[in-house]
Image 1 (cartoon, rainbow, N blue to C red):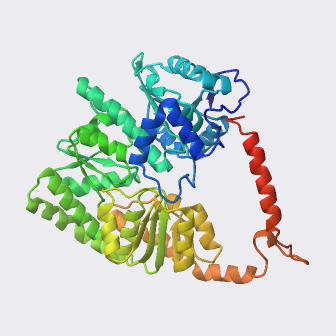
Image 2: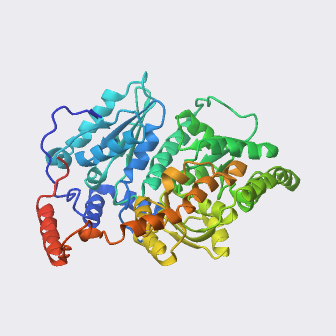
Image 3: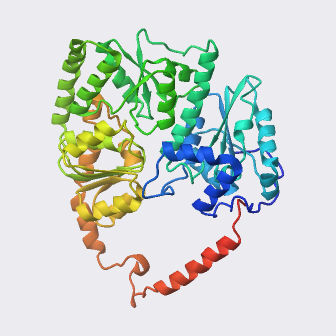
Length: 504
């Protein structure tokens, strides 16, 4: 991590923001008073809240940070509390970013006097080397957003290097998945303005015919599979947004049709529609999903029905055979925060599994309606903006043979001797599209389902050991003292409020 200010002063809590621990309401009030009211209104429209007003996983800015760090010739600068920046950079490198992250420290004085903005501006000018970078992304975290640090006043370009400033506050963007859309949408808006102003750089690789832009992060093989599937239609898969380099944004905007594989990229869809592009929902998963998706694609391009039927005849039998060859038998709950939960549930259902519940931390959009309608038509409950408590309650009430979900959901299920799989690492890390996706989940899912007997043996072996405050083997089992917990929790909260700080 690069510290762009070599001598940061001690940090104190600005009264305007209330510090990191000021609470959502106070931070929102401060942001609105500081001129960020329009931004917050757009966030509320794009990313409507649900049962959990605050993210229950990682900081949402991890999503936008990850998008920037995966792009070639792109520099990243964070403006936020030191503790937040440390956590974000640690997480990003844990996920293999291998990129330097710039950081502009601040204190109460630089924050409330506007000096922080000048420090950011100075850092951007120092970093804007066209020999190294095409783009610099500057991100306001919670406290700078609440204090109104105006990144929109940064130059749009310095020495030929694009400057993209975004706000990704935890009190405005519900999930890290939607934070990816914040940056992707901002980059698409910038690239669209460039394309409208004059000629832009061509992509490294260009298809011979029309392309379909794919919206949403996918397993690397899926775009190639989709491209093969739509080849009989005379089409090819275009760039995947978020892209890996800037020039791909122009190619993405040039595609006549955009496939919202992940349906929550609201800001990105707005940019595509402003460019006159058609957007279709769902994805080619399973037999029914692939058939409906090819129909939607044919309608969007105005293709003859016979041509679409030819593509179906080539691919649907192969998908049907892959599903039949690797059946899944068991009762399963599915939950996660990636945005592809409904697609996974469809594929599992077509593989023969009994899907009891689908929970997604992402919101319902019109692009997710085809998947929601398909699942609900089969009696499967779909819960958007699902909270951790709701996902855990589904496991408790339904007692599935397998729970697929986030880390705490997996822990909760395993504590009841229910096999469980972590959605992000074990489900998202496999192809979902076409024939390859049809059988890809069977091995890991069937392997987990077969573990039920082993879980039962472990539960019986450890029965009586105790849990929670009584975990372990005791001569005299400890007694829970909830009154003391409440007393000291109240003291800690009071102390934190009295000493709230924006960093260390």
